[in-house]
Image 1: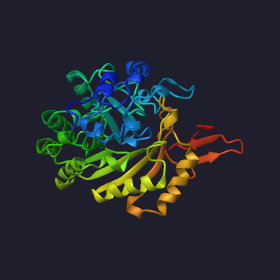
Image 2: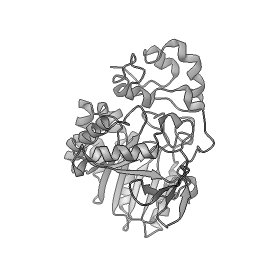
Image 3: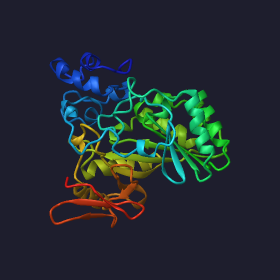
Amino acid sequence: MSARTLRSIHDLAAGALIPRGRIEALTGVALRYAVAITPAMADLIDAGEPRDPIALQFIPDERELDTLPKESGDPIGDNRHSPVEGIVHRYRNRVLLKIVHICPVYCRFCFRREMVGPDREPNLSPDAITGAIDYIAGHNEIAEVIFTGGDPFILTARRVSELTRRCAAIPHVKILRWHTRVPVVDPARVTPEFVAALEASPKATTVALHANHPREFTAAARQAIARLVDAGIPMLSQTVLLKGVNDDVATLAELMDCFVENRIKPYYLHHADLAPGTSHFRTTIADGQRLMRELRARVSGPALPAYVLDIPGGYAKVNLESDAIERSSDGAIRVRDDEGVWHAYGPE
C-alpha cells in the first residue's frame, strides 16, 4: 500500500501511476485543478490499463484544460443562492453548510473544482461559521442542515462534535446530513471516535456516500460503512454517471447492489454537471435514460436511484425520467424547474 496521499504529478510518476513522459503535459492541469489520491484509491488503480475506472476518476487528464462555452465554474449556481459565507439556501427547508474547501481526493469531474483545493477558497473561519449558524438560527423554515464542502469528513472528531452540537441546539433544525466520499476513499478516518461525534446529537443524522464504481467497496470501505450503519446512522448513496467509468448497465447494477448489501439506500444518479474541462466524462441524457430503463430490469426497486440533473444556474434538480424534460425535433433540450419555469439545456 502507498504510504501517503499523492499530491502532485511527480508523486503520480514516482508511484508508477503515470509514465514520466506525461509529467510535462499534465503539469498544467495540476496547476489549475487540485490533485490528491489517497493510498486506498492508489492501490486500486491498474496503471497498465488505460481505461481503468478508478484512474479515470482521479488521475489528471490533458482534456481538463479544454473548456466548452456552456461550461461554468459554478455550474449549479451555488453563488446565486449564498446569502452569507458558507451557506447555500437553494431549497426553502434546507441549506448546505460548506464548512471546508478541501478533500482527501480530488475527482477530475468535480462540479466545485474551481472552488476546492488547498490553493482555492479558505475553509470557513470561526467568525464565518458563527455567521452561517446564526443565519440558520434566524430562518425558522430551515429543518435540515447538509454539511458539504469540500468533504466535511476530513474534520476531526472534536470539530464534528462541536458543529453537531451547535446546529442541533437550533430548535427548528430536525435533520443533520453529511455528504462525503471518505468511507470509500480514506476509510481509516471513520474511527469509533468520529462516529461517536456524529451521534452527539438527539437530532436525526444521515450520511450520503458518494461512490461511482463497485471496486471502491474494498474490505476497509465496507468496515467503515458498517461502523456508521451499526451506530444507527442511515446512509444514502450519490453517484455521478461518468463515461468510461460506470456508463454500462452491468457496472451500474453491480454498484447499486453494492450499496444495498452494505445497507445504503441508492438515492441519486447525477447527470454530470457542466463543470469546466469535464466534457469527456459526460454522457448524453438519452444514454442515461436508456441505462435507467436497463437498470430497472436488472435490480430490485429498493436498488433504483433517481436519475437527476441539477439545472445549470441554480434552478434546482429535475428528475430526468419525468415529464419535466422535453426534446424538440432539432434535438434541443429544455427542462422544467420546481416553479414550472422551463430552461434551455441542449442540444448536447
